[in-house]
Amino acid sequence: MKIMMVTEMIMPITLMFLIYLISKVHIINSLIIIEYISVMVVVSMMTFIKIMSLENHNMLYFMILLITESVLGLSILISMIRTHGNDFLKCSAVLKL
View 1 (tube, helix red, strand yellow):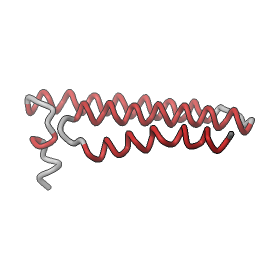
View 2 (cartoon, helix red, strand yellow; view 1 turned 135 degrees about the vertical axis):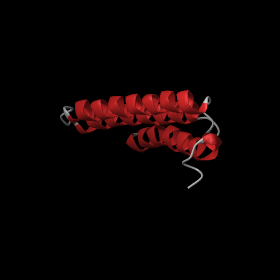
View 3 (spheres, one colour; view 1 turned 180 degrees about the vertical axis):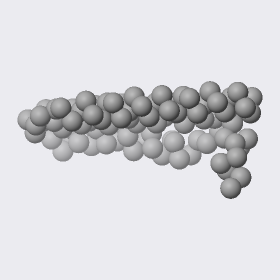
View 4 (cartoon, helix red, strand yellow; view 1 turned 30 degrees about the horizontal axis):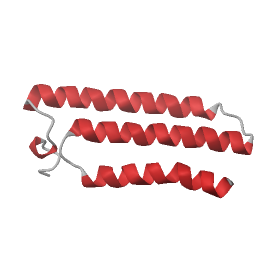
């Protein structure tokens, strides 16, 4: 039963990671996929903590890290829309390097 739970937790993360690697058109799509992966990692970590009967104070640190990551991503998205006028990855200077 525990093996099935592990595969049920890893499969959506792997699937969304593959979708992230394939779709590289808009930055907002990439940010949404990254946030979904982050939420699925949090859910799988909480399930793992409950199965192993561990302390969950480290989840707070991980959640703070995820929140700061999402705020940073949105601020980069807003600054890119203001400077370039859109959120296409092909218009950014990152791909021209």
